[in-house]
Length: 74
Length: 74
Image 1 (cartoon, each protein chain N blue to C red):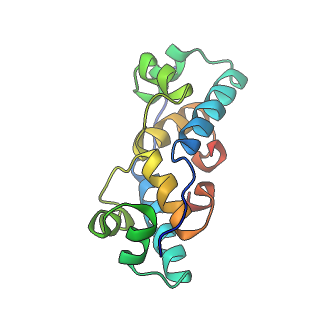
Image 2 (image 1 turned 60 degrees about the vertical axis):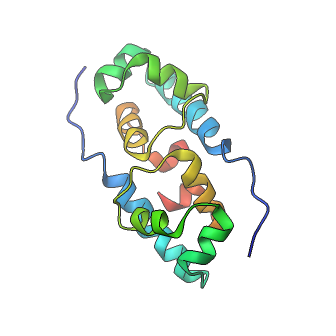
């Protein structure tokens, strides 16, 4: 039942790009989003460029921080 | 800029419930999905009940394993 898999980092790159779009649309700095989400700005910066394999709980916090549903960042 | 946050585990519970629905719909056992995704069946079982704070790369692998877009599991 094995199956060819796509690059698993595809979703983290989409999430990072969409997060940055929504953060900018909301006029928020990295520090603003850090305050709202409880996640450090340096970690968020790395997430936005796909450098971190972020967990679902932290994805939830960031989606909420920018005011969109998590599904809309994927 | 602080803001009241919802329980961050909301999304992992949704993901787990939806993953199980799609796995069952596809007629796959935990072992079938383990073979397709490269993730152990015991870890998948815990994800399905929201016991694991799963990473985005592994969410991608599981979504692909059941044949749906990640956004449709959230």
